Image: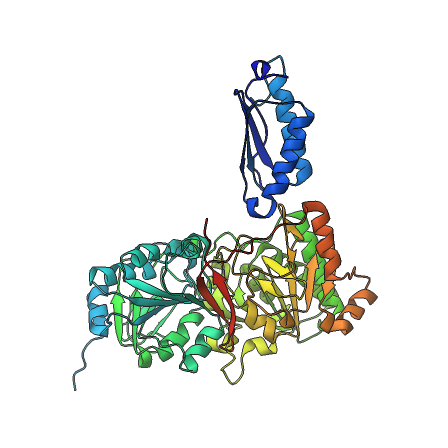
Length: 95
Length: 471
């Protein structure tokens, strides 16, 4: 998949225990992480994000995660949904 | 003979008359909680008068006191001593706003330090909702009534100079004064000591969170099984949502079994007032009112008594209320596998609270129970070593979580009682592993900045230090 087909998409919320993922089309791949638990889980979150991004073959776009202490399964699910939405033909849900 | 009036025309004049000089210590109490205006007003006057290098000794610094940081910046305040510090101030202190180390004590340790001569108060500023011209005063009467004035009583007793600050002057003699004229040097009338509607802040309602309710129900059952719940039972609970829910469930058990408790103590809420009125407790011993129902009750119900911080919890007193406690319910931001509890700093080591009466009641009560979920968002509750020791593990008997109850190994007879009652008793290490199976294992920064605060035990010993955070 390449960035030409991507559009802005979001998934998640800013509730405690959730994460808001926003994807913006861009030429290069950039991951931005904001988290209250960055000292405790920053590395673990980035590992999961890279895994999910790679599993979808995403090679470009700005992916921001505004984490509110979400569990790993939540982060993976929200990110996967945001990526799917960014590739949808119609106007993305929550975009 | 003619006597000079104690009534000063202004706060500034009272400060001048007090002889307050650079480097001295001034004290405050926090019964008006997030509605207090006295501390900020006094510091503003001190700044205008050009006073420098003052130490503020307050029973607690709330979010509404964050302007203290302005007076730290302009050099008016260079020292802080308190039993609790709101995160809004703690975040700046943790980043090194203050050169000198903050001194944290407990509600009992603060008056004990005064009694032992370790803590000197030069000028005490006592907010009172009702006072007469000689300084007889209380927090029970007047438009800004806040109830018990217990934390200010040791200040009135020990300070070199005592200023009563009120917004409602009554005819002499004020009947039912909690602090007497014999210890008061000056009285100042200001427009408003604060907003009593803001006494009740965030933490003082029964939780509606199902996990919190589950934990509370288990804790109440544990009390029921402990052997301590019988006629004459004595009890204290914090004002946190889960702690209050324990009182609610406990009330149900007492009602069912026809048990009447002797007293409930500490910070008092409407929930405890209702248990008093229902006859489930015979008396309330109140050092601080947490809501309007408690404020009204202490003003009109003789069974609802006011106690000083000294009588509440001072280890230097000849005896104190906490020593008569059967059970106390407490919270924790972190607990470690040795049962040490942290209520001072968050998971990043930033100051966001303080002991209050935590360590005092834990030391005094026969059964000290921590109620907390095993994780909050992604942060596990149970760690190998707490970031800050607020209450030593030897004083904590039981941890109640939604995945089971962990008994301090020092209390094996308690574990047997709970098991016999069918409660799920598990090793604390199992609860830690359960949480980490959900959250992952957190990494911990080992980098430590310079010390920015000292935690002093209720007996006056150094319990722990808190390090500066470098972003």
